[in-house]
Length: 283
Ligand SMILES: NC(=O)c1ccc[n+]([C@@H]2O[C@H](COP(=O)([O-])OP(=O)(O)OC[C@H]3O[C@@H](n4cnc5c(N)ncnc54)[C@H](OP(=O)(O)O)[C@@H]3O)[C@@H](O)[C@H]2O)c1
Image (cartoon, rainbow, N blue to C red; front, side):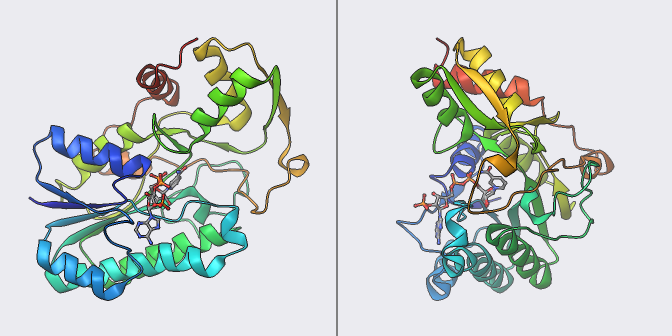
């Protein structure tokens, strides 16, 4: 089996490339400098030349607030790029895995979202991910759509690294307390994706670390684990203005993992511990 990983310099792409390497699976990678995925002709030429058996699409426009002021850029990078890759996969017979998001849901209620629940995004980024899901599913039967949430790793821009910086600079910091979801350590998700692509159990999945918390609880745990004395000041979303609206309830049900015989991922607290060890972030 030969894999193509897009977004290989991003949080997930990097973890996935490392995991595929550990498992000895031949892999070719791209990132924006080597292949802009919004260029349909270049994407097709690359996929035809490389002939991967599986395309793992981890690239994406992830600047959720910025997307509100440049929706066309976000839609092209998420929906357009996914369509280009799906067309190329159709052309060469590759299977494809799309990484999607909890932001496809409205965030109403407090029950975990099932994979088949109605998608009703609140922001441009969420719309772009719904369109990406549609593009892939409408063209390919051999595809997996894996929704995840609140990703963090030792690399790149993410909440853990931001909180470690703020925790060292400040005595207290406000953090949103009414959005509930699951932090997800990129290497844990990468391990699941490697297991998944070795099956033909195609379809929609929700995959996050186990357990739910608010951003404020997540921040407190980061400070505690890192030995930082900074206090979290819990604030409701309404008091913390952001360009993009975000779902309050981002809980994702793991029934898709159970149904298909996959082990659930470790707890988010366990993932956080390993991430901080990798960063060397303990004070
Ligand atoms: N991060 C989260 O909390 C989260 C939650 C749910 C779902 N997801 C999804 O999970 C996937 C991976 O997320 P991540 O956190 O690993 O993202 P990331 O760290 O932001 O990495 C994404 C990578 O994609 C690249 N990229 C953007 N536009 C591109 C284009 N047109 N052509 C080629 N490459 C392009 C980016 O390059 P630049 O850095 O130069 O832009 C970056 O290297 C994405 O699909 C994301 O939507 C993420």
